[in-house]
Image 1 (cartoon, rainbow, N blue to C red):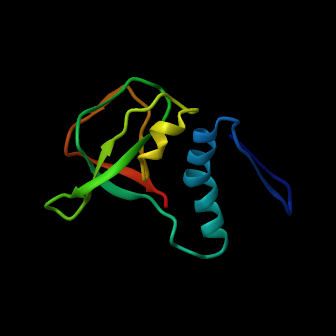
Image 2: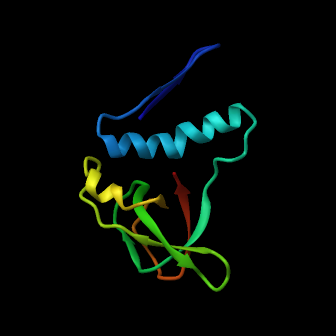
Image 3: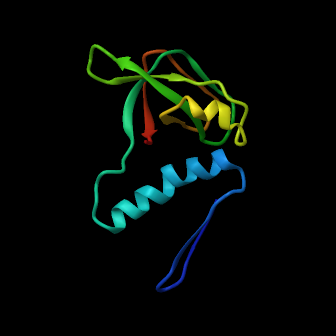
Length: 120
């Protein structure tokens, strides 16, 4: 993704892969648009991981996930959806959020709280 601005213009340049474009729109563009219009409806939610998530990459990863219930502490529970990367529409089709997995290496333990970006 590319971002630039002049004195009066803001420009977002989205990637070519459809899943990457959606992730960038949900994670970066919609929060910017929301804040610009003083709307606080676009924000991350905290969810519980249903399994250990091993993060090997030195970059932040956005993993498609699906809501599967509510934890006893009231936090939504999201299950990771396996998918084949930024061009995999089929993997995205069963999801309703992206888990934001911070740059690694690290292991996010099952039951840990993690940031998620919900989309409709």
